[in-house]
Image (cartoon, one colour):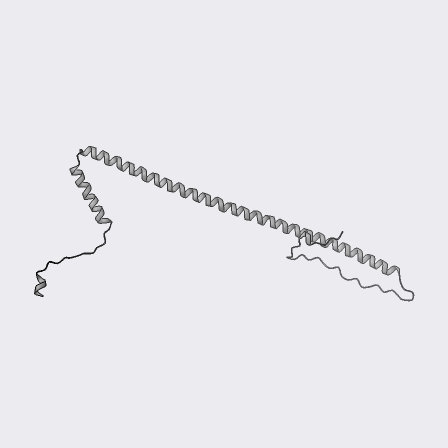
Length: 165
């Protein structure tokens, strides 16, 4: 080990560079630049104020631009959603109207069918009573109860209705 004691050695430190060393370097560089600058302090201060004002204006312009873009995007999205809601609402109203019309047509058809059936039953009774067989006592046939019309959740399209006329 004695032979290695006289040799120079290198120490390598690994640290991650961050923002803090950069800022310290920037501040020290700015301070040295102010001390060595060929202008007077008033001129340098005026230039610093002017640059700060330009930086502020540029930042405000960017913020305003981003705000306007976000506002426009939100407005367009809201308008598209409202258009879709209106379209769905119109479609629902149209289908509800079709359903009401179908129910009304079904009721009319049922009413017409009932009237036609009652008319045919009356004709059949009249024809049956008018021609009795000789020697057979006529019995009055039992009258079936008239069915009630019950509307359920069945949708009847107009083209599916029978032509009763």
